[in-house]
Each structure stands twice: as C-alpha cells, then as structure tokens.
Amino acid sequence: MKYYSVRITLLIVLIDFALLLSCSNDEAKKQIQTVARPTVPVLNGERQIGTQIWMTKNLNVSCYRNGDIIPQVTDPTQWANLTTGAWCYYNNSTANGTTYGKLYNWYAVAGIYDDASLANPALRKKLAPNGWHIPTNGEWSNLINYLDPNADGGNAFNIAGGKMKEIGTSNWLSPNTYATNSSGFTGLPGGCRPYDGTFYVIGQYGSWWSSAENGTANAWSRNLSYDNGNAGKGGGPKKNGFSVRCVKD
Image 1 (cartoon, rainbow, N blue to C red):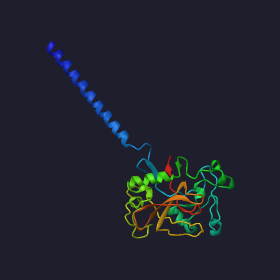
Image 2 (spheres, rainbow, N blue to C red):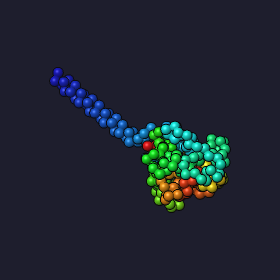
Image 3 (cartoon, rainbow, N blue to C red):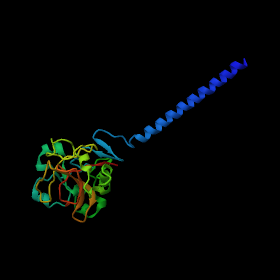
Image 4 (cartoon, rainbow, N blue to C red):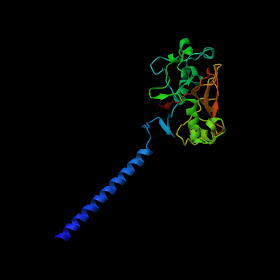
C-alpha cells in the first residue's frame, strides 16, 4: 500500500509540474503576441508604418470636422488671392478627384476660415476627420527616417520615397524610379496648384502638407517624384494647393 501511495504522490507532482510549464509557455506566448500587435487596430484604408498609422489615400473631404463647408474655388485669380481655406480638384476635374483626392491650400489645413481665425489660432477648425490629425513636420520626419535612417527627415537624398510610392505607371509617369511601396503608404502624383491658380505636374510629383509653418507666407511639405526615390522636404507658399494625408491620433 505504501508503494502505491508513493507512486500516486509522484504522479500528482509530475502533473502539477506539467500544468505549470504549460501555463508558463502560454503566458510567454501571450506576452510575445501582445508586443507584436499594433497599439491600436489597423483598419481598411490605414497602414501602420513604424509606430505611426497613416491613411493610405489622399484626403477628399469638403467639410471641416464640425461640418462647416470648405469652399471649392475654381477661378485662378480668386485662388491666388485667398488667405482662408479652400480646395479644388486638379484641373477642376472631378475625375482627378476620384483618383488623387482634393488639393487644399494650407489655410484649409490650418482650419482658417475667416479673418478672425487667421489672426487667432484658437478660433480655427479641424480639417482631419475625428481620430486623425494633419502630420506635423516632425511626424513626417519620423516616417521618412523610419524608412531610411539616413534620410535626415527628407533634407538628405534618401530611398524613403521609393518605399512610399505606388508601384507601376498607371498613375505615375514612367519610369517611376525605385517605386516599391513596401511601406504601404501608396503615394500618388496628384500634382499641385501653385499660388497663381494654375495647375502643374500631375503624374510627375506628389506634395503633401504638414501642419507646420515655415515663416509667415510658407509652410512645410513632403514631396515624391516620378524620376527618383527621394522623399524630399519642401517649404512652399501657403497659397499652394497640395494633397493631404492624415496620421492617427
């Protein structure tokens, strides 16, 4: 009887040890899986790049976050004289809007809708949808430096642009140099509307605003080109019409 009692006790100890080991392994797996997951859910139309989550399409809204209308301005002279928010389609064509989204002047990016909000930033509206914001100059630099640690935020020639560009020549002009879209950013060559109200370089270049000013009349942007793999930093006039991408809060 004593022999069987010892065997039973030993069997119980072995079972307890196996259960403990199993639980420890499950907990370790759980911890690894938790670390590997994004900090917030990534949905359709979004892409996590490094620690950031970006929209994968250019913004195409005609209202501020609170529902107030952003004027569509087609006349070039009117566009050139604006100091409040506005948008347009490239060449004033809705077909271009379907592919490339809208072009916004920086006043729309900043939420400036009248003279009072031009003078007082506390009165300004939000362009980005709820849960998103216009990327700061630093957030653009973080994206580009993640894709190429030697990029210096876009100041130095780098390979980040190739990783950000949509592949192929359906939208980009040939040769769309070094385009891999390995980041999933899917950058498009939406062109721009310069401060004189004309339209320029669709298919060749894409430019995206940041929220940061570069002096009184200019603001920072980032640019991609059909003929190189660079993600460049620009500082164009606030009156320009550029594309907009948003990053998640």
